[in-house]
Length: 595
Ligand code: ARG
Image (cartoon, rainbow, N blue to C red):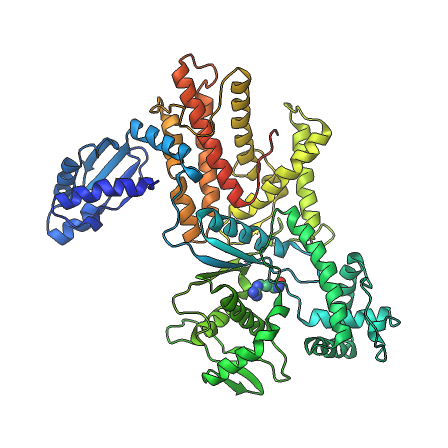
């Protein structure tokens, strides 16, 4: 189904062209004066310059030519100095609603050229607990992946674990200090290594911080950890075995955590998987004359003349031969090119890593690893802060773990449900509902902010059932569900598609406003994808929920005496529900049946 803006523009193009003007002036935009019109075309102003005429004369001519746009418009008006103000006709809107309801994916069109897109998000570090910093990557990345898939692209989400750095050596050496009797530390041991890991996830999570703290005070320990890391990277079998244990224990736990967030990955690759591609990378960079030695390290210049700030050379190998963060990211890109040859890359990572990605992307392009015209997008997100404006901490001042954050918000939602006067749920039902609603509160609280901005995590506000919050959106959906249920109980039939149900032209202003918003669905989804901006979906969903609620408060839906009108209402709110649900599914959460 064509997007509403394109349909309108089609009419205006024809009119501009019939008047002898270039069609490109026929652009239609949302009105910035909703009191006067719904849409507008400002092209007469620019056309006036090109054709040396008065804008209003051009506008008048076009308006006359346009007529009612073959029934599309209920109002077409030229106003000073040359605006063309537009209102859509009720019949056109009603037909558009029916088209959406009957269409697959609510009328969304398939992309002209479906792309294969890598979304690198998550970025959890093995053996370290997931903390709130990883929450944003997971939540934002998941929604971008879902959105792309929903639009018809082939999205490949990769968790890209941090599994190859110094933390591995730290854990190995800490383990040696704690359990020197383990076979992994017996140099003369030649047998098989045990299946069972020599630690639980609980121990592992405690081992890493302890080792990290020790390395800050104990130089010798730090050096041992460094050597152990190099040994591991060079394939030393006993350490490889420990490493495998660490990965397995950690990934099991990570999967559980991500699944609580409704987040899944197509690939569970990590930095370690880039290892086999590094020799190839180094060869390529040296052969092309891009990499050179600087103070023993291997570097690639990436500065460009148009840079407004200094972009330092990209370090691809340390003087001791060790690989760096950039090395593994570039190796990973070679791997992704070989495996998928993506049309686009999207990295969802903390914005403080901006410089790293500028360097990596430039090297990838300069070396021809990635074709020039393939977009490499860095979606850098801001920090989640506490109410004091500082990075989020526990009440005791420690690093906030993700599990704790989730249980806090679930609890807040649970309290709200229990306090509600209209509560109709048992405690058990309320618990179950609060997990669903809590997730929406958390995700919407994050996604409704532009990703690059820092935001304040506010349990009270996020879990509120009123205002621009996840629970408010869910509440609206639940409200529609309950109207539809009552209608069914009274013997009515609800069709998911409007084919058999008539949708009439709107009878009132709030009904028309709701329809107008519903028509924008495809445009909003496509835009937020093009701009990698899920917050635009949140904005839309919020406006839509508001529009529905205004309509609801003004309309006696179920007690409407005119059966055809009542059926039309049911068709319309069924569509509203489907649009809202499609949007929140893309955002990565769902609505409960009751709340
Ligand atoms: N593990 C990294 C961190 O915690 C994030 C990884 C981001 N992705 C990437 N391809 N570098 O900071």
